[in-house]
Structures are given as C-alpha cells and as structure tokens.
Length: 289
Image (cartoon, rainbow, N blue to C red; front, side, top):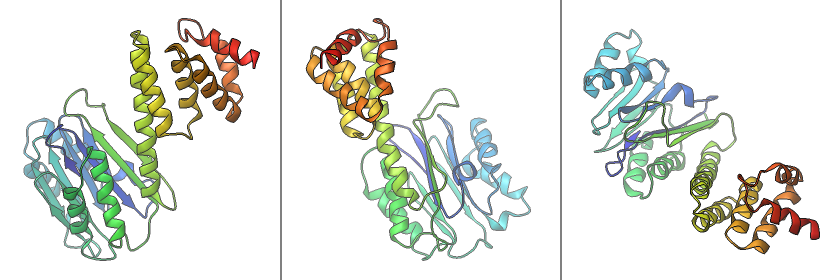
C-alpha cells in the first residue's frame, strides 16, 4: 500500500493463498486514500476507513476508531494511508505468525502467515529501491515477498488497485484481479503489460477522433508491439496505419489479425467510413490479395 509523492496516485497490491483476495483486501479512493485489510479479514474496514478519511479524519484516528469498535481487533491486520502519505498500520497480537508490518515515508508493507518474518522488510526494500510507475513498484514489492518465501500456504490469487490523485471516487488507473492461478504474481504482471497496451490504444482512439492520424497510428503500433498476442490491437493498429498513409503495412496487420480470428473481416465490413476512414481501402486491398 503506497502513495506516489510525485503523481499523488495511491495504490494497494496483494497476493494470498485464498480465492479472489482482491475484493477482501484492496481498497482505494481517488484523492482520498488507500486501505489494506488482511489476516482474519473484515472488509468493512476498507470503505469505513475511506469514509473517515474523506471527512478529514486523520489516518491514525480513523483506524483507531474502527479497531476500538471491533471485538476481533487482535486478529486483524489493517493499514491505512491518506492522500498526504500519512500512514497508520495495525497487526493484531493474535495474527498467525509470521505476521508484522513495516512502514516507510510513502508506503506500508504488511503480511501474515509468512514463511519468514523478513517478508515485510523485503517488500519495503524492493518498493523503495524500484523506479517507474506506482503499479510497477507495487508489483516489485509482491515479487520480493514471494522471493523471500511468501505465504506459508502457497499462492492462489492477487490484485492491484491504483487511483488518481483527484477525480470522482470511482476513477481508477489500475483495477486488476487474478482470482485463481498457479502463479498469480506473474499473471498480474502480464495483465499490467496488457493494460498498458490497451491504454495506448485508447489514447490512439482519442487522437484518431481528433484527426491526428499519424500520432494515433504510432500509438496503435506501440500497443501492438507491447502485446503482440492481442489480435484486437493488431487489427485496430492496421486500420490506423492504413489511415496514416501506409496502406500496405495496415493491410498486413489486419491480415495477421484475421488469420487468428476470421471474424475481424466480418467486423471490417460493418465499419462505417466515419468510424474507419481507411476501412474501404483495406477491404479492397484484402480482396485483391
């Protein structure tokens, strides 16, 4: 759980040997804060703590009030961070060993039922020592936890939420869940890469709508390179490439997408000139081939 002091983004990442850990553990609200609820989980800590932060209550007071009202506080593990980076963390005395937390200037790492008591410290060191986007640093912390021994029970699910520094409460930069997998951290990393590619394609859509075809084509091509297994990205990259003036390259990309899924050619026939100005030229070229 962390805040990026440069961007103001807030985020939570978690792995567990429990099915679908995300809805239980990871909570964040744009411009407000983030919460991680663990051990014998009471998910209500998440929204209740965020509501208190939104009302201007400090993180320590917000968590303290919730713990004071909880008869099972001794088996809870909860961490709260507000938009300013103020952190409050709790590991109950009856949490299953190894259980502890480590806090830094802009992050908190907590774990229970760990193979080694050094897991939270390893997570903190990895987060502090890594660079890049907040989601990349959160993933590095999860990878470090696993390298240090991880959950004594094994692994099953993972999740990550990253929210922007402001905006409507529902806005999220990242909202990914791996509900059940043999290597959930690796799968989470794959999904992060795929999301990055689709974010590029989405930005390309905006540029295309604004008539900035060359820039849009460049973004589509980057997206397709980042996720070469995604035939959808290859299809739209082909249309954007054709519209930018490289008909041969665009046709080749659309053809490769159709080799994986012939229904892309069906969709191509349904696209209006307004939606895909180069669609007719691509269809004609494919027909000639």
